[in-house]
Structure formats: structure tokens, C-alpha cells
Image 1 (cartoon, chains in turn green, purple):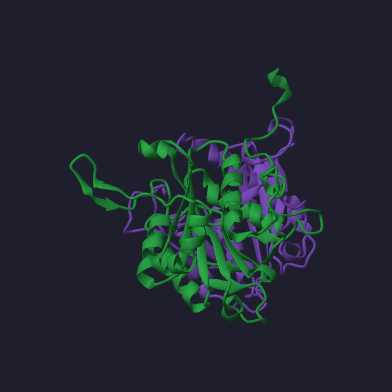
Image 2 (cartoon, chains in turn orange, green):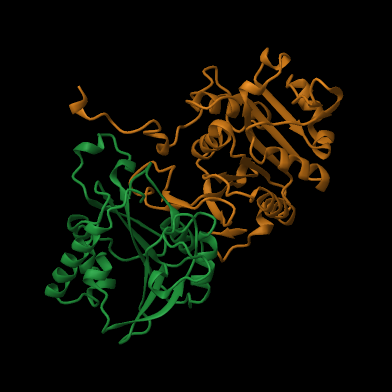
Length: 263
Length: 208
């Protein structure tokens, strides 16, 4: 459930007409890394917590700290940030899902989206690169999906941007190639969120990248630039990674310094 | 162990509650008949001041049990004027720092506090990109969300078994506002500390 930081102000009413941007906990954590870049670059303000029993608990000090003064604020596993000037609200998820909790989380999240009257939801996600079929191996590794309600609103824009829609794959490959289903391996809750939004009439877009586990920072940059082509959150530069600010919490992603005695 | 040595005793504290749970990490084999002696989270109350509660959690609370544990424990407590202090340990190998952990002087204490906690903290705060997991994280998250002042003291240690050096790393807490009035006599503490170390020798189990 959404718990605002500031109890005095209103909660649900403040998000009317906003775009909710959120990650799916997926292969390489690309969605979450991309969201980190968005929050850090746009210097977004924390407005609340998404308190839930569906995620593994974790705490730490402010991951977007820029100086000693703002480094001591506690952060938990799911928090909500907002930027009213761009009518943008962002949910960041920092830990994996607890077993059997995918569906309850989706239900809680989507009912919050409906109650707070968000205009649309954009999910950043990823999918296993090794599961691509022959056609998907060529060309761009980026894909999008739109629920029917959002298709009506922005479908034309996607054509102009020359974006590629996520292909459906055969339900029973080799046996029956006519039955096609949506398949997002490694995407976590992406498919569930998308199918639920379709049936509930929620305007949702999914932006995903095919990738593998490893150093996923470049994947995060690619995904966030893809998002930027549509939402224009920051001015597009020629050097596509310079306009995004890396948060301080990305330090030491691959371990500590080496012991000098090793050499 | 720190709390048992320096704070708890049978005269001033009484057992008022227990939280029982089972997961595959628990050492007892019986799931239906959990004895009081192997109950996992004991709650003590200070007889002279019933507003002071102490919880000794001697088992691992699994990630899918943490939420229910929180709801049951905090659900039965009055949150007005509540303040929470959590003590926990963690292997120093998990500590992320620019240098190698081999050169660090362990054990050392690091703290995390919620927004509402206004008092002085007894040690440096835990720097980014370090995080805390498990039950201490669950309790601190709960306190941060529901605006309860709380502080977590995490001791990073390189010793797996119970030892005096790690226990004594928590000593700075004895001068904190919360624990100052609860400290036992010093000679008592040394006696109990000795007892802990001799008894832990016999439980030499490689399955931690």
C-alpha cells in the first residue's frame, strides 16, 4: 500500500493525470537501473513508500546522496518519487519478490494506479537475450508493448519513432505455429502486469530490452534513452550517456578494493 | 549475547511473551510441540518500568515470515511514544568499501536510523552502497514508514562463533540514553560473558 512521507498532504489526489514510471524486477535489473538514472538525473523528491509484504525487506541510506547533508535519509525496498513539473511519478523497487507474491503485488499496484487516477503506466523491463528467435537476433534489441487503451492514444507516435513491437511467439513451437502468445522470459512480473492492465482497461506501456546478466549499466543507458525518445524527460544529446547522472549508490557494484597482500 | 551479559537478568526482567515460528533453519525437529526453552523470540519486560520491552530473537526469521512477525509484534504494541533499538551482527565480508575488508579493523559498529530518531547515535552511520537485510531491515522499514523513531546498530565481525571481542564491540551503546539506566553490575557481566564462551564451545556445529 502507498504510505505518503508527509501525512498532512493529500495522497491519492496528487497523482491525477500523472505518468507512473516503474521497473519490473527482471534479468540484469535493467529496469531498476534505468529508474535509478531517471530519479538521480531529474533530482526527484521522495513522496512516499510502497509498503508491501511482497518484496524482501531491505534498508540503506539515501542512494541518491550528493553530499553529506542528504546522505542520512533512510530508504526502504519500494519508494515513490515525484516531479510535478513533468507530471511524473516514479516507483522504484529495490529487492526481489517473495515466492507466490507476484499476483498480490500486481493487484495492489494496479488498484493503487486506478485509485490515484494516474493517466498511464510505463514499465521498464528486460528479457533474456538467449531466448530470442532467429528474427529477433537481428536489428534493435528494444521492444515495446501497449495496452489497447494506450494504443489508441499513442500508437501513431510509436510508428513515427520506428519502434518495434514485441512479437508474439508460438504457444507450442514446432507443433502448432498458429497459436501465438506473449512470452517475456526473464521479465518477472512484466507479463502479468501487462495482461492484467489489458483486462482492466489501464493505459500501460512496456519498454524492454533483450539482455543477459552481467554489467548491465550500458543496457540501462540504452533503455533509458529509448524511454527518452518518447517521454522527452531530458534534452537528447549527441553523446547519449552524458545527460544522465549516475547515482552514488552505483559505486562498488563489483566488489571491494583488492587486498594488497594479494600481489 | 551482549544484551544477556550487560542488560538482562532474572531479577529485574520478566518474560511476558513469546513469538514462535518454524522454518528450515530452526534446529528443533518438532514443529507442533515447541517447548518454551526452545522458543525463538522471547519478550522480556522490565519489572520496575513496564514500558521497557526487550526481545531476544535467537533464530532466523525467513523472508516470508518477517512481515507477519512484524504485524503480530507491533500490532500488540502501542505506537504512541514508541522507540525501537535493534542490535544485529553481520559478516565483515559483506561490507562494501573502497579498500579491502582485510585491512579494516573489525569488529566495528555502524548505525542506521529512521527519520524520526533525533538522539545521538553511538557510532558512524552506514555509508552507501551498503544495505541491511532480513529481520533488522524489516523492523527498520516498518518504523520508517510508520514514523516511529528507531535505530539499528549493526556490528560487522569476522568471527562466526560467539566471542567476547564482538560482544564488547557493542559497549558504546551502554552510554546511550536508552541503555544507560538498564546496565547491570560490571562483575555480573564478566561472569556471564565467561559462561557464554565455555558453553558455545560444545556446540561445535558446522551447519550454522
